[in-house]
Length: 196
Image (cartoon, rainbow, N blue to C red; front, side, top):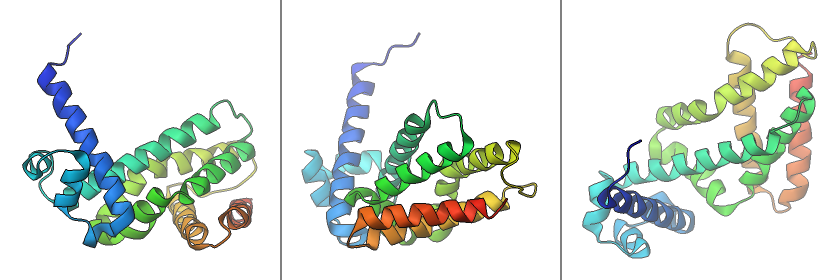
């Protein structure tokens, strides 16, 4: 078993503080207006420390976005644990995703800013890394239960993932997010049911 040195622990703690501060600033200011100086100040580190861990603002934004994606994945995984019925599982997963879309940080960073800040190709690559497998597994569960019929390959999962992205944007933009969340969740489930 390898034990981390104090220096490694400090570096990890510092990096985590910088990412947390970046999430705060990107949520409030957006990518374009957030400054590395403000992020360093919020993290209580020097700007040099920020650049020690991240090559530039885009690299730091990507770390903030990945943190949001990992947190969402952990929440969904925990939230669907123990659900055996494939429909209940996908419904719970969709609802957990849409609930996250109601939070200011996820809404601003993952939905509104990430495609432009990272570029569409890099944003999509990260989205798929975290969620394409999850959507594919949920659809496979429904197919194995004989409840939907999907062609081989991941095109169906990619299309549902894209629909979820649009659903998230609709919820994030709504004045009455809880009502929209329920409507949009039902609509996505109807799309999936249409594969039957």
